[in-house]
Length: 179
Image 1 (cartoon, rainbow, N blue to C red):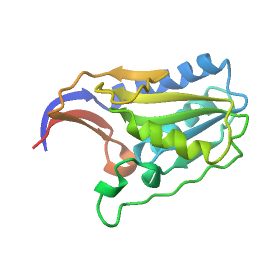
Image 2: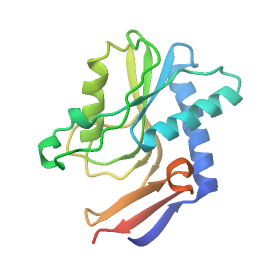
Image 3: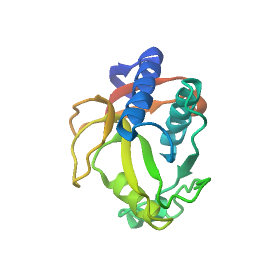
């Protein structure tokens, strides 16, 4: 992996996640009836951090779920014979709730489309907001985030790698050259 640039270090990630949490409150006019749902994998850890920021700010503990979209992907047939499947766990009925879908990087929009399909199979939310840490552009579908940590223009010859302590032992976001 050839790192071309560091987008965020640990401190910048923490500040950005805190800002995202407060933007969620602003967009929803509070946290009542909201459910945070992280898209597997790193979106799950980001949603937990957002939940912790909101709790420490006095908004109580929001329900926090995790969503695996593997079987909703439109490229499933192109994936390996045994795709990596992670857990889906939504602690409450999402019908009538304000859902905040959390992911690390928004690129083509296809992951979010799959996540929306998966959510609709579980119930009918009142509203769905999309919060992403990084928006790198190159959309292939009409998907736009409601809350963005940072917009990072990239070429198709680059990718964004997000590292979180819980999985990777460090918090960092970098641009890497595709090999």
